[in-house]
Length: 92
Image: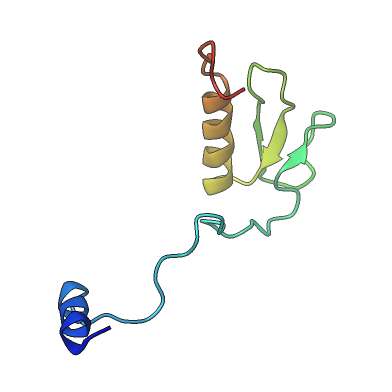
């Protein structure tokens, strides 16, 4: 790389150097450490206090217990996405 190219790159990046973005395979969030979060529903009581039951999608996925907040939102979102009817000729 020539000095002119290096200067142009620094100007484009506003002087920032170092690591770029994380690879696409990287986990975008940290794994939850709450006791019982993500466990399948067996019986009427949660495995730990304060957990929220999230029903599985219409495709027959099992219900699970999640901690309130982020994990519950992610689980409900996944269930809603799975419930979207697929068009013929899709990936699956």
